[in-house]
Image (cartoon, rainbow, N blue to C red):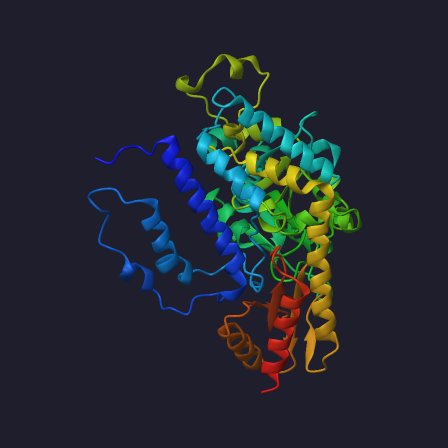
Length: 473
């Protein structure tokens, strides 16, 4: 039987792993952004099972180089423009390493007091940094928690909304009426998934039309949908408004939506998964106007704020409602601290019971970069996207398909869908860059999303030169 790794063995192996990661980051720009190998290529290279006796870490790292790295899509690559970023950074990796080394399970305050208290503090730090409404601070009735993703935040918000809409009956009786959720036609797919998991079914989601000029939800269409459902005897439970939709980064008009939700007593959840990070910059906080109406709000530091996946920051204005909806307290979890009412047990703020010490990586990131470092990162992404948009605007073969308030540019080659699809395929096949597509007003549209901390003006210019040169052929 292989012996446990001693602290000294761990020290030596850990140095080797850190060196491997540093070398990987250093060589990213020379690697193809995506793998050209067919499905099953890695699986075919792996042995049928583990060895009978242990292997050294050096052997594992050699296979990382030989088998794994060449078959990745490199999300940290400076030419990765495909999806909203899933950034990481040195401080984040180090924070995660400490979290893994501590091995804390922070389901209750009692099972990891510092795990809970650091998380509460970090969510308050973020709320201050982004100038979120006072009602989201832990010093009042609200507070924040780290979820694994915005999808989970939407699900938790939906469950709390059902608890409210059912006057508390939902907790015991379940979905006893036809409840409805509302979002724009560009709302994230996780909204429908949350509705299905919560028992509303996909038909329980009303997709509200958007303004063709802004691609943002039309408040008057939302009101009409709510009125129609109420007339049919259905119960409007939750509206999910988006700051920075996935297709085009449209910003739904929160002030108007918020007033409608307040009028009808409907839970308002604001999904700012990608674009929420922009609010660290005062000049970009216009996108959060009206947030004071929200019952809950989330954004992903793991997208554009240099914190590795998974880390979604989720706030509620009234934590009591959330806890009431989700808490289950079996005898084996009872403890003096919980019963005192003086602590937060984050197990009551999420779907799973267990939770990792994710606040550590956020703490490392916030302390390493500081306020100005984070602002510089966001501003760089916005400036690089504007630089690319200027190149598109100056070429009469192309057109911009939507506004670009953040770091995503939606554009297309003048012509039919097939020409744009071919352009995308040919550019991505070079391995130098990776873009994706969406549909705007039914037309095939290319998306270039800036986000990697490794991306510079030279990489954005290379992407444009590839597109412009390929389109000319």
